[in-house]
Amino acid sequence: MRYIGRRLLHGLLLLVGVSLLSFLFADLAPGDYFSGLRADPRVSAAAVAALRAQYGLDRPLPVRYAAWVASVLRGDFGYSLAYNSPVGPLLWARVRATLLLTGTATILAWLIALPLGIWNATARGTWRDTVSKVVLSFLLAVPDLLWAIVFLMLAVETGYFPAGGMVSPGPLRVEDVAWHLVLPVDVLVLGMLPMLVRHVRASMAEALDSPFALSARAQGIPRRRLLFRHLLPAAANPLISLFGFSLGTLLSASLLVEVVMGWPGLGPLFLEAIMARDFALVLAVVMLSASFLVVGNLAADILLYRMDPRIRMK
Amino acid sequence: MSRRTKIAAALVFLGILHGLAIFAGFLAPYPYDEQHREFPYSPPTPIHVWLSSARAPHVVFLLGTDAYGRDVFSRLLYGGRVSLFTGLLAAFLSLGLGLALGTAAGFYGGWLDRLLMRTGELVMALPWLYLLLAVRAFLPLHITSTQAFFLIVVIIGGVGWVRPARLIRGVVLSARERGFVLAARGFGASDAYLIRRHILPLTTGVVLTQATVLIPQYILAEVALSFLGLGVGEPVPSWGNMLAEAQQYHALVAHIWMLAPGFAIIPVLLAYLLLADAIMAPAARAR
Image (cartoon, rainbow over all chains, first blue to last red; front, side, top):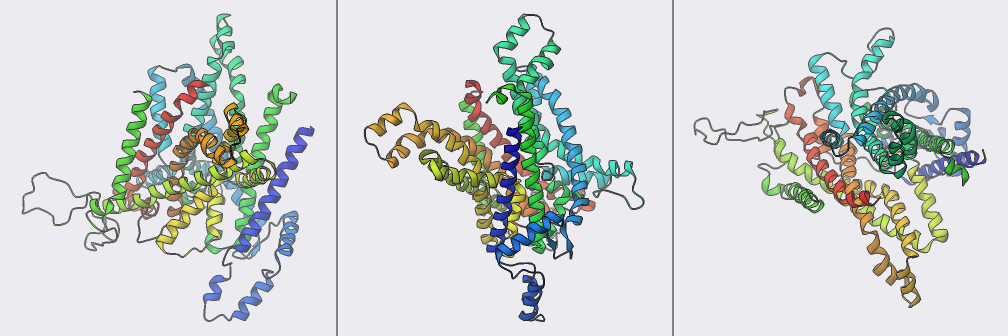
């Protein structure tokens, strides 16, 4: 329990540090939301200054930071100038859409990667392993971006799948959303799969080579029981860390795919915020995705702590 | 295939690809911004070995043309310059930073080590692509292509120092206590001499493997940034902004050659993968 508490505190401090750093960096950066207005000859410098004062951009850094922290505690996450509303409500719908997409893809990728990786590890040195290695290397070398564009092109050409977006016009139906999910999820799974399979294969191979595996096999333990009951737990540690990382990137893994395929998630919102120099929105998305990474790593650590007695002993 | 042959093959192949990009000025049939307005979206010119002079076209587009009638093949070569060399330079930068900071942290320890590693944790707490975009967000958006190129190299390279630095720090920490280093120190060797003569050579393995991992990652990062309109801008081609032009899905099937930059990335990444696997192979066997 003390271990978990300490890790929690550590993660919290990390997030505070990230937010401080972002504020400092944004302060040093040239330009803000009103830079565009300032270049406009019809708007006087005094008017811009008044606007900046109205939104509190002219206050000193510590005051702005304190105001931002207060707004986070209220659940507002700052005030978006481009949308003229608190950031919080803007985010939640986008976060839900992104989580739906990446959650489905992550679950699917792991469900495929685990058996495939185990199977590859047991088939080392045979032609099946070689074939799967070649295919996976090729998949690893194809950028997500290309998959997304090609899939969309095929969707438009064949008409079997909707070309981007999350819902069709009309009332919200579950099967409609599921239909829209197919292509972006495919792209994400293709992107995640090779890395996952490689890791599963490597850690299973290590377990297979260990002396205890040989001894267990010599004692006549059936193959399936040996693989899943004896070897998988022994190979699990790096995989748990990797799973934590998967959890952590739930919000950030799909940015490009969302932008290309028009999925109304965090990615497009983030990009718009960047183009509009809407600092509050950028900061909120950065903080949210950072907290996911921190929480994912934390979850992996806690899982490791529960699963592996060697770590508990320390 | 032995490990040595694999490494050599990958290096030669990469050399050829980079050579194509370097010598784009010689190899490209047209300048990257020359517009043939009368041939928009012209398909790849079929190549005949014997041309009957009557049907010989006076312009040849090996990979077709884009919306402005610019030769896609020429732009691909020039675009490779931007994309491939962003990867190389940015990896050079972040490995240099990682080497300097990691060695300093590992060798001297104390408050310097703590400061660097805590800062590193802050950087690692952010998703990589978001961090890149956010850093890019706070810098001027409208700049010339050359400025954009160097800005992107600096951003990608500057953001990526943490992982190599941590790995190098680990190597340096164990190297510092090795017998021959302690012996050299006992004979009165200075810190600078120890680092240069005994510590840095031990980090070669980590640096090489990190290079093969980082360069393709950085090439993809440049492609992503330019694709999103935050990198090198028109009319200078990069594989990213060329792909962005391909984003008209209703028409893309009719001019599929616009996807050429996307496919050009694949052999580059494959070669780096092969190189990384071959370099890491003995380490995997030792484990």
